[in-house]
Image (cartoon, rainbow, N blue to C red):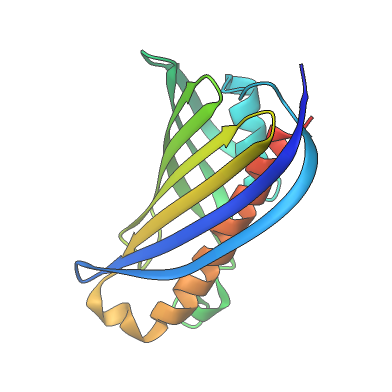
Length: 180
């Protein structure tokens, strides 16, 4: 059963570099849509979400493992475009990265933890997402941290701009998946 509501999108981005955490931005956007009655965390639904976020690149080595307490583990790899700031350092236009994702659904609440690995010049990216739906409102939030070696400080701003765009895009895709 679908419910009518306002989907609020709230984003808090933070970054870790040299063991320091900084809040970067808070963005709020509202959009009306018909909401699903609950989150679909099936293998098919999570695959579609991953496929949309990868800009329809192939999803490779997909593994979906149901866990306890309405949680699942998803591991896959996909191709991403290399941000332009890295093209002088890395001559490839795209790379294959690994995604390790934990998803838990409890009623109308969805929680995800994503770890993106195998990224040149970046140790890893960790993203925490929380989304909830109700009859009147829904909200999505995300927080990410990125670990980079100190010698990448010269491109830190560009890396965060790219990641901010990617996280906002992920939340928009998640929002579409919450709508019927």
